[in-house]
Image 1 (cartoon, rainbow, N blue to C red):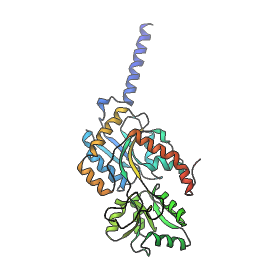
Image 2 (cartoon, helix red, strand yellow):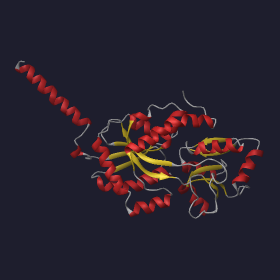
Image 3 (cartoon, one colour):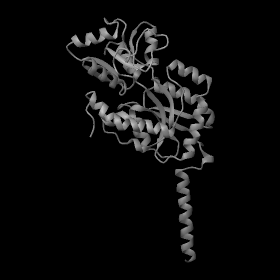
Image 4 (tube, one colour):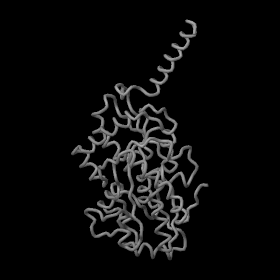
Length: 324
């Protein structure tokens, strides 16, 4: 090989190293600029406030700001679609719940699959959902609400940003012989505001989104929709206790674009496990009605991808049209 050929090879090798370094920075350099977290739900909703609480504590592990931005809409798929196409360099991540990965892709065309992400881990478990109506509604129990729906002669309108909240209503309607119709909103707060305004008759939302209005006397809790009764609302039974096999349980977690380096995922794992031990985070999460639990990336992947494999049949069972 001549000197010119050697120079070309050396130049190409140096170029390859430069390109590789620009896509996957050395672990010692991460993070060296702000990291953007794309929350797939609206500002002020449960996923948003839980994320912002956790990131305040996680910020200690980042010399530059963690920037939380909201991309709600399309059943919480807009944020995931954006992050799936982002550079896999650790500077654009997605905050999701089960819906965007396991449920929404069965109901609509989305530009990603569950395999298009690296699963960093889950950081909050929410099993405190509730079915709430306006306090001035004529029904005071779930049984009375069901009876109202049966004799109404038209669908009962409820509000939801997407799954799993809407699925709970459809499952309840199928079991109780009531027709429910969804009015779609960008998130939980918008749904609750619509209920307060009288545009819909009911919501199933996280405790933090409805409890202030229950305490102020504007809304009434008819049933807990998770695995347990609510603290402070112990006289209100769960849907399961009332004879309906419905139990919502959702995770909030972090995804990254596919091929994001392992050292990025490890940095976030350490930052989040430390953040979740913060007394301030524990207290805030308790107020939100969620548990500060870290689920490692591999387990988070198994949970969400496993749910995606089974949800198609479950969605059809409650009468929803699914994508091919």
